[in-house]
Length: 328
Ligand SMILES: [Zn+2]
Ligand SMILES: [Zn+2]
Image 1 (cartoon, rainbow, N blue to C red):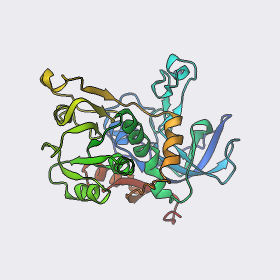
Image 2 (tube, rainbow, N blue to C red; image 1 turned 90 degrees about the horizontal axis):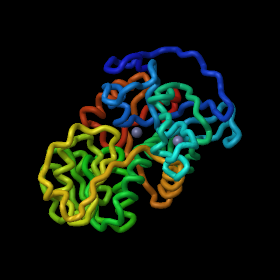
Image 3 (cartoon, rainbow, N blue to C red; image 1 turned 120 degrees about the vertical axis):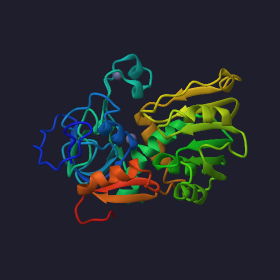
């Protein structure tokens, strides 16, 4: 399913099979998670994608050709971070997520809304046993970015999650397993998301427009809504952190300095490092994190994107690519 121009519907196309470069693997795609970032690319909120482009950066696939790190037939995951230079100041200081020349899957490189995909094996992960193809896919971005955001939120006893979708439903499980109290904020009246949050152990779930019953130590904002920044700062105690986890957000309205005063910290989280991926994929099966997914056939990628845009997905949206199989 190909994006030929931003803002235009995906079209079904036969593309030429790319020739493998050294270090690349060819995968038969089994599933591919649908991410909010895919919508930002589709809608033109993120500039200059490769065009035409195959979206999708939460790929679960089987190695069918090439590579040295993974045997043929191995099940691997391909995340958003597709390539880094290894030379810039960020790469050399363990911050490859900030690489000046990074290339991202499903943005600069063709991704997983396709029957086959090609990836640099150095950026691929082993998928933990015990996860079906559909349930593993959301770990690869929603899980990774959420995990990185949680780490950067410090060591909060009470953590707020603004926007209870794919990322938050994974982060909530990790946070609860660490003994933290989770407060879930959703769109007004989103009973499905609020009930999912409570099922996953949230202490409180409610509308993002209201103040939580307790003062928070930190908050992570997953929804791409700038208005949530002052709202989250207002909910966080002195010295607390607000982490913006999305790659794009609507403009942040001005707010009184008083909301930031008291050594509150406001920061963003950008992309992922391979270390984040290894840590999360080792941690998830131990907890264990269970992902809630809604699946769509590859040919209905538009339907999946529409549902995500409309806030109709409970948990994470996943494309089922391998024909006729509903995961393991
Ligand atoms: Zn670099
Ligand atoms: Zn993503």
